[in-house]
Image (cartoon, rainbow, N blue to C red; front, side):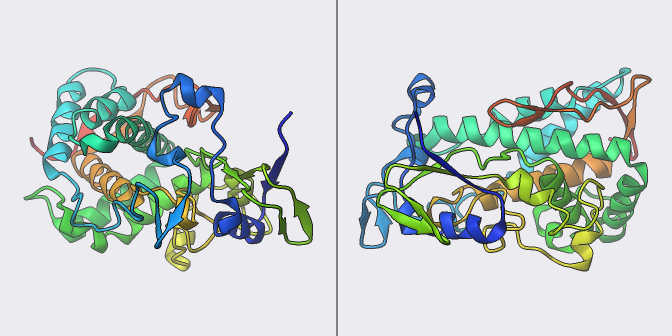
Amino acid sequence: MTRFVIASEPETAKEILNSSEFADRPIKESAYELLFNRAMGLHPSVITGGTSEGFPQPIFSAREEFPTSEDSAKKLVMNCWEYSTGETILPSKVVGFTRSKEKVQESVGKEMIFRGTDTVAILLEWTLARMVVHPDIQAKAQAEIDSVVGVNRQVADSDLPNLPYLQAILKETLRVHPPGPLLSWARLSIHDTHVGPHFVPAGTTAMVNMYAITHDEKIWSNPNEFKPERFMEEDVPIMGSDLRLAPFGAGRRVCPGKAMGMATAQLWLAQMLQNFRWVPTENGVDLTECLNLSMEMKSSLVCKAVPRISA
């Protein structure tokens, strides 16, 4: 038997994620099966001089250390061009193939490939699915890109800060379809502690139900409606300071690749929308969710990519 405590409100989620009392990770049999027992994400939190022993924190915080690869974005677009001459395209295959080729640091390579590949691919698949279902939102994003970038060059990394509606679309996708609805890996209390008025013994596994928070009508108006405009009205931060939407977690155990992941998703989505109009096939789009290691589409997105500009 395992004792669990689950936070479904921003206040208790922040208390757990930012607390030094929940500094460890529970390592279960599945971690050993995936060879993650030695992974950075499951490393014990022996705090020494402001760092977790063996892994200085944060590792990938500096944007300059891992700049978004514009070359990989170009490869992604070229892969889409190859498929766009046919009847249908399977975005998850195109994104996953491109992402797996990227170089990462050898010391955390396996973990980066596993966590970085599936989360970015799943986020983009959900986003493109929403673009197909909501052509008005897709057209608005493309109009923004055309206004900022024009049609004579490809979207560059430096353009991203000037594309707020594109960023709002990704935020809304993360809210409605969070790839890690339970923030992937749990926390483990290392001492007896309290969460609010509740006593939590040492050795308790703590999880945050981010899906419940992002679909709570007390927190979000019309939570089941896909509405990127909500983030134009209020620029909610998503990097961990506001637990209404914290897809990467928060505190010392926050995802170290959060900045790189979001920058990659923004650039790739921008170029995919700049170059193609994404339209449904005769079978439409099934938005049914399926929880595996991440929150995936139960039926992979199949759609058409119609070129908007010449190759």
